[in-house]
Image 1 (cartoon, one colour):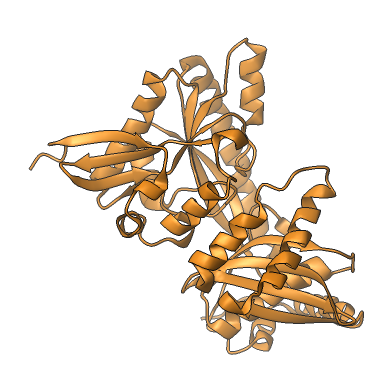
Image 2 (cartoon, one colour):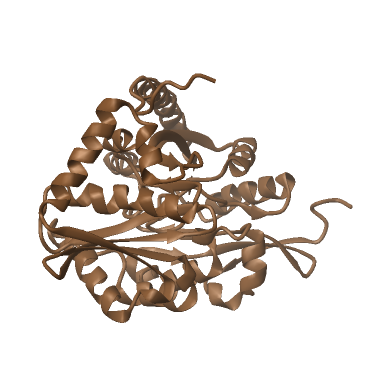
Length: 380
């Protein structure tokens, strides 16, 4: 049967109108593209036209069957994306052109790679990618961007004519460590000594740590967490991207996915890190504190997270965007990418040249990082 037979595309502005099970099947049950996670963002008011994120989910039906979808937003700014294109927007402005609004395929405020063209076959993913371009053209928008796609999506996007942008994150991998000490033993003597010294300095200041999951996380814990999370933004004179209601919805709808690491000093909580987990991976996401203690951030967000992964036998810990300082903690450089289609051929040509040059810088950066591995040289 022709794959385009009875093919229909439409846009949906209310994800809660779609069947959750069907959506999650299309997304491969990836936690951060799940119906529950995305609807929590929408229904809490964090992702709305008022915040500059207008949901316009692309749906592809074959007959009556939903066979493809794309988490898609009409964006009026570039905040909360973790792939920086403000320079492109400024170039448009200098030439008297509008860069915004633009189309964006991503998980809002979440620099985690995952499925973006939600479909069961490579051919259908290509059809979705091409439809993104058609939407951009027909609505006379400047561009469409797909952030942190999986490898399967990348192939489809390249087939459709998207330009690729390279970047690097830092991820930790569990090599079947029996304990945290087993992990430390895999590091070079210098890195192992430094991590132990840093942890000792934290503990010498009277710190202790608690790991809580799911419904072990109380409303009072969430209140404290949100106070810390909001404080990290307020100290920089910014408003938090996410509100308290969003985290309450996560606890209500997917409590088994929440992990809270709390730091206590002299009987009182002073810091915490809230992460999300699935059966294989811990996604480090949100952090904050009410008091400054040297080394507290690294201990809470990275050392304790790695200890949690080892205890829970999780395979990976993704430490979020940027941060070559994570390398010394055992998080290794991991390639990521984004995909871009620019309507104006002049800007498309200039951006394509920029991306090729940037890719060379990223490749050299990865090469330099690979020469500074924190791990002992393995002899197989």
